[in-house]
Length: 365
View 1 (spheres, rainbow, N blue to C red):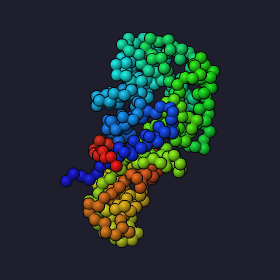
View 2: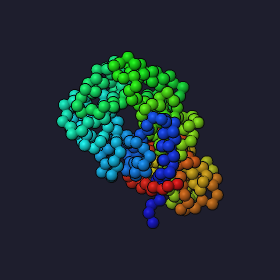
View 3: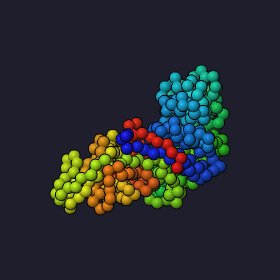
View 4: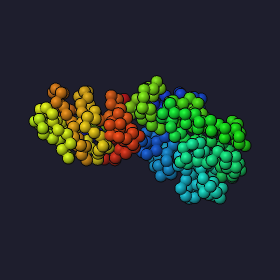
């Protein structure tokens, strides 16, 4: 019998989450971001499940886009980090990849490229995150250059990315929205130019950020980008259920210790369940004692350090636990965000770092 550690991927929940995003952003268009192996869920399978209902996909780089093309995905694919070499422009032209561009090297390479067909360009504007993007004052000149290029499709999208969108009480997001709107107003760009601002926090929490194109990622997988309850985010459905099973049980006495470094000590006669799940399967090594785990539908607590292949759990108060009982590490009743908080990280990282060793099983409910 196979080792029980696995990740169930609920495709019905995935489509529900996408539809929530699309409805919030209507009448704007909403692409699906499937970078980083669809946040650990499996890019090809996720894209196939969404292809009938989305207008386009977003990935980080051309390698991720080519993986989708090789799997038969035919919709446009936006390269969110743009290009890294001049050779990528001809591939993008051939493969109907859209390009997020932001620097002079990229602009010059595109102007000089010999392409069989034009490419769709998204111009990224730095409105305050200071990671990538044109200065707002350069928008007119670059837009005019791209509009005049023989290699650029007529519709150019003006885009930006939010630094603090997941914190709804911060003023920076409104400042960034206003910065982009002002940059367009003060430029030679047409006033009705196509705009894209909203990532998952923008889609859910900042109605002013919803525009002609929207780019949800994290929310598609059923995860809220917010630390507090939120009316729209609370409608999301978990897509991944990370699960395993109890593989061993033992009783230990008061004062006995569990796991590497003997970091958990029994303060009462205790029953310890060992579960086939560790950091080699994507469960965070930094999860602390007391991190919640669900066994037989009930919450229990991590007891001892996470190993590469196993964790140990205090099931003293759980009656009737047996070898082979189901264990949920995160899913519907235990958010990956809650586990991430206990591990000192964020849900984005736990999902994106899911290793290939953990088999994905795709289900419809």
